[in-house]
Image (cartoon, rainbow, N blue to C red; front, side, top):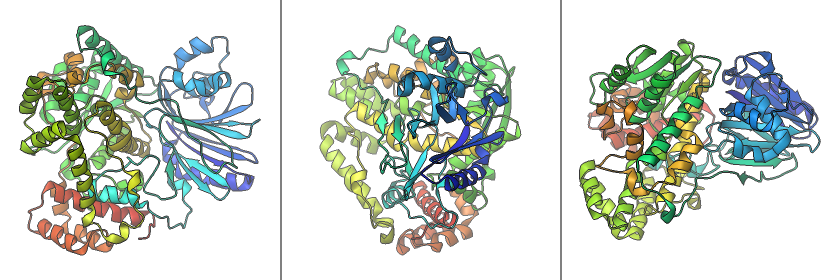
Length: 612
């Protein structure tokens, strides 16, 4: 896990200056080593966090054995030793780093190698003969790449800060801002970021790029498989075993490291499965990091204790953090700077606390359960897609029994029925609600909003909902904050459920089998039941690392009011209403989140000198 940056232009000194500045900014991503390649057309900067091949044989930038190609790479390729056996058995390797595997495989296969790689990556390879770079990002975008066209040059980096001039006042992206303030959605508008002139390089894509190219011509090499309904299979014992084996393989493959590893454990289904698999098959010490809010209704300590009790404490070393210590006034600015964007709620700060604990314990690699909700339809809106599938296939008993068992309330039931009976009407209502919720925002922030960037999935189509969750409203900002918080502490985050082989297998299973007896992610629960205490297997709620937002806002009430008045983010009458509720202690969760989003935007603008 590392930090990378690239200048692609025609000014060698300008490139070297950019590379040196980027190296200083990205030091936290790679404190163990650094290197620069510089010629008249390109500068490649690498900051190294040593996970595999701890010796100098893993130093980057790294040349291919033929001398034509030079690579900078951020990530881990979990099957790289297998790739050596399959395609490079006759090659004499200098060391055992995955970087060396990639550059030699690229020498033989070029972009075709992407189909063979299992893992996460952001990589740039300079072709010294063709005078262009090859750039690629992993299938889910776990490893970040940002790109900006400045004059006749391209600037590329793992984070946004190196792409901003020291005294720049960058413009904000109006659509991204409106979506965040109104709905809390972000990271879902394709290549757009909160910075108007900085774009994401898209996940699951690659490009060949020269300094004279005005546009980066992205090509997609992977997407979620869309399998015809008639070809999908029921979730029987054989399929259950197949899913189980792929999940275990995904988890164990991500223990590949020459340093100690740890895991985060919330007490939910997903992280508990990771803990159970490691406890069963991994014979080394496992550092377990958790954070709770004691004496609150959201305290998940009993679930964490159930996992530890089930597997014993033989190889668990437990680290705990009290989330009641969270201070928005003290900590929000720090995490806005780390994330480089406003974010949805304080749970991201809670995750940051876990990374700090891991760093203090000397851990460089952390596994977590992110991605399972997206893959296995764990969110409420995704469960509706399954219910619709059951309704349309006339499985009315299953439809009713699941609705009743989920105990989601009358509103959820009515919306589900409306989607079933009149999906077009329901979509129009969602579109109208989306626009109406922007009414709270000060009009100056809405200038330049492009509604064509915002697309709503067809809630009646199983695949569309799945794809929107993974490439739209859910996963992109999760992989973003995991990368940023981890790398701020020089820690590599890994997500075993995002092994693409799991998704390709899940795509073959009938949609109606994902929800049974009111239990979301039913096929995951059943496939990994042996790793779950009963109290967790039967959970129907979803909490995660809950952070007491209303309490935190109340504790810092004076400072919150100052932030709300600092810039005109929301309309004045709405600010007064929200602060009156805060003062009278009558805030609801939606109210609290609206305040949170407003002050997050305000602090982001301060931190990055963004003008209104």
